[in-house]
Amino acid sequence: MSTNWQEFSEELMHMMREDQAVREALAATGELFQGYSPVMEKVHLKHAEHLKELIDLHGFPTIDKVGNDAAIAAMRLILHSISWPEFMRAMEVIATDLLPSNQIPKQYVAMLIDRIRFYEGRKQVYGTNSDWDDNGILRVTDVEDPDNLNSRRAEVGLSPLESLVLSPLEEFHPADPKKRHEEFVAWTHKVGWRTV
Image (tube, rainbow, N blue to C red; front, side):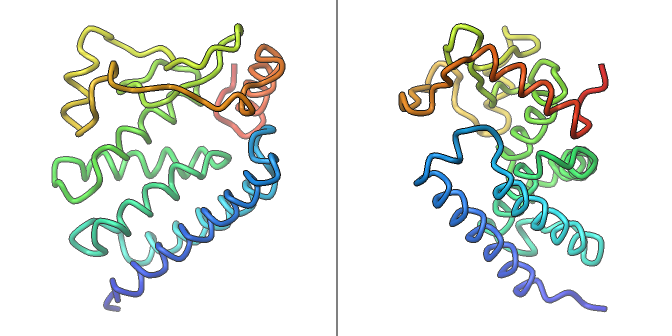
């Protein structure tokens, strides 16, 4: 059966708009910043399941098929499926394979690679994830081969790490950074990111 890529594109954009609307509503009440909201998780999983069905039926939504904006939306939906490790890992394999084709948003592939490593408790490749340390300071978490980090970032269209400004609003600051980290690690075990 032939694929209507325009419909696929519109579906991706619709899911991303819904994701953003729920996020904004939760941000307005402050719930978004109190751990992983069950409401947000439900939306993320619903979208990930639907996206998986679409990809299983039609293949991965590359830029040449759905356009740049929808390809980015697809990658963002994948990045948000954090409580479904198997799906994110499967999408990482596909996205990494597609990287040389220039038909997938490179920065988002880098973010996906890093996000998986971050949740697994491993060092990042591109330095795209930040977290609060035990002292309550937001910093980029550990990266492998830091001397060559900026050249790796440049390869995927990311600016040098030094140009990043991490300036979170004070209201996002965790009251107890150490407790928050312990809860985060417990969550990674619960959903299957870590086994040890």
